[in-house]
Image (cartoon, rainbow, N blue to C red; front, top):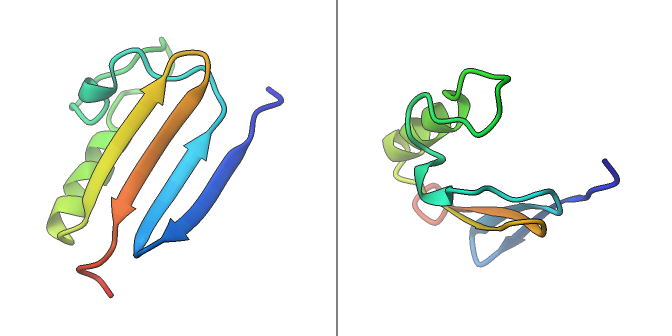
Amino acid sequence: KDGKVILKIENNILYIEDTGKGIKNPSKVFERFYKEQERGIGIGLHIVKKLCEELDVKIGVKSILNEGTSFSLNLKNLI
């Protein structure tokens, strides 16, 4: 609620940022079936990670609780 999603590209890196509640364990977010909420299956970001690996795109995540999360996709190998 009342949050923002920001998309930006700098030096062939796509950043997807939000001002949400953050992720408790960002190092686990790409694991299969990992989830922090009851809803969902916990496979979406795992699939994204696998697709990025197939395309030679590096994906990363940074998160601060109660401030937000930022995903980065390094697209230099696609361009």
